[in-house]
Image (cartoon, rainbow, N blue to C red; front, top):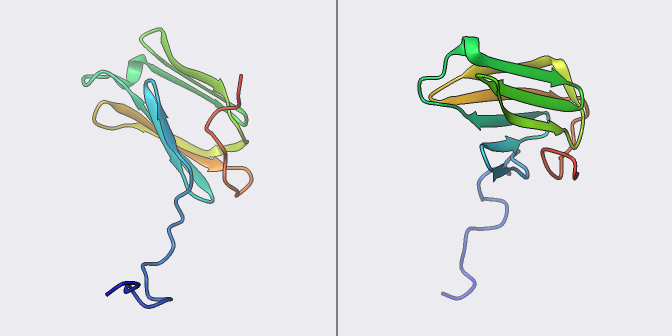
Length: 110
């Protein structure tokens, strides 16, 4: 019938996920406290060829001397609470936000 739907207050719990996105070579998502950035690498990527530089307002990722990502964050991270791994042809960064609030984008507008 028209107007029928789940009773109010009975839907799934609200998601903590917020704005994320995809750009050339990487994708990202966030929740209140963390960001997750996934950067494409060759499928046979070697950790020894990867260089990740994290600072409170900056990210730079190089693979075999080629810069894959280089930018100023739209917010600040806690670099000492952030980590990265290589997983299935991607460098996956888990970044702790310095201030738990939504970011409008991963990087500040240039």
